[in-house]
Image 1 (cartoon, rainbow, N blue to C red):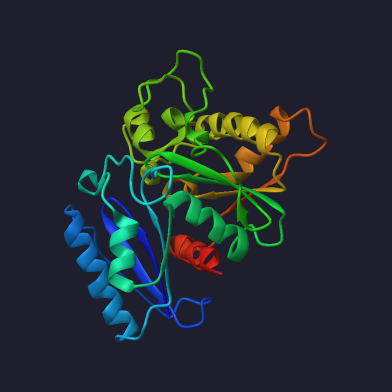
Image 2: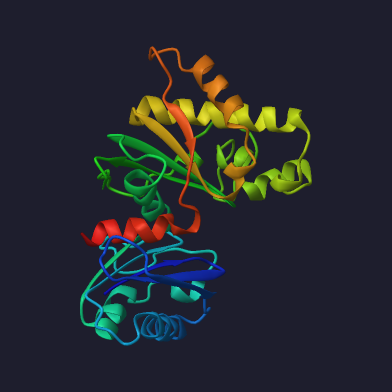
Length: 272
């Protein structure tokens, strides 16, 4: 039996797999603000889902950048009580098995590349567009090696443009991510019906994707996250084809297909 999880700022999704390939059972519970309580909650839910069966491996994604050795959260605006806490060590102690931790966006990208929209492609550029924007390059179903986290949401698309919560200006996130869309247009993304607004958002996203494509050279682009459900992909694809003049053809843009299970399947892939 294998345990996988996706720890967000509001909820954590916990699941078990009997064969390491398919999710057997899953459950969503609120993420405790207290770290120790969070460990206890993970163990309790695991025991419930696995019916006490021995856990052979644990892997999961956490919302925020991890420390260099990937043993716990280095930063997180959503669950500050988990920062610099020995998450991997505690899980190893609780389950007495191998534990793998990754950023939640990375886990989602792996899941979509090997089980979802990006399946069959050698190089997948995955961007999760939600409250913010994260992303990862997946090559042959494996995480692209980098010295730190990729941050495509913080590429500059408008010099001296809209302020970003990170302290910078003109970042892609500040024009396309959910929190900023609400700030700019005074409506949540799912409430916006004006096609001109979505045309503008699509154009900004296409500028960012053009930069991402020339740096990552993917076979396909997969967009996940709640905001991507509202973005008209045909508009983004059209602008990307217009802006991307260095390559003969722009890669296809696809919407993620695994939903909340993307990170769980990414975790199972890392356990292989």
